[in-house]
Length: 212
Image (cartoon, rainbow, N blue to C red):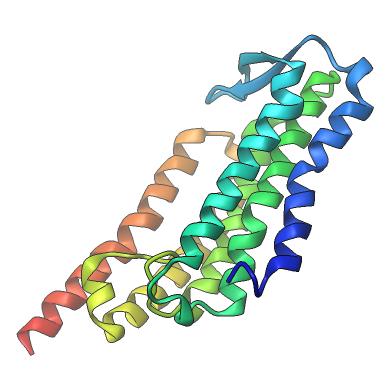
């Protein structure tokens, strides 16, 4: 996987590190202490030095990116991972890196942003994209709903991921639609339900298979 997608891997690596370049350009404008964590009300409650915001966060994202790629490349069922699924793995972290750093820099420069609206909308779109990929995902140990009974049965896997795809798309749309309420517990509740429904559905399908 790594050798085959080396060019895209290098491109996504550069994108993950773009916030460092932006941070160096803005260095003299950035305050010595920068907000790097926000509570449920969207208020900054964690601070770090410029070095942490500019260098540490993108480098941490880069480490996560390479770990995900490396683990995926070692998957025993890597032949089942389609190019679309690989592109999803390759682009999740770059998008998160640019988004998170953009939020942090904006706050540091004194721009007022409504975190309780921005994050639900962003992650709602994120869930919708993943939901569209789910039904196309074949059996593997790296991507998808990797419960044991789905990994044991191709029919269960396909059913689980069709269900997960619909659930995540609907969940993403709900999160976006309700983002104006600015209640983080709604976002968390919908996200938990999105995870639970495919797992329960997969288990019930497994029980049904065993009875036949």
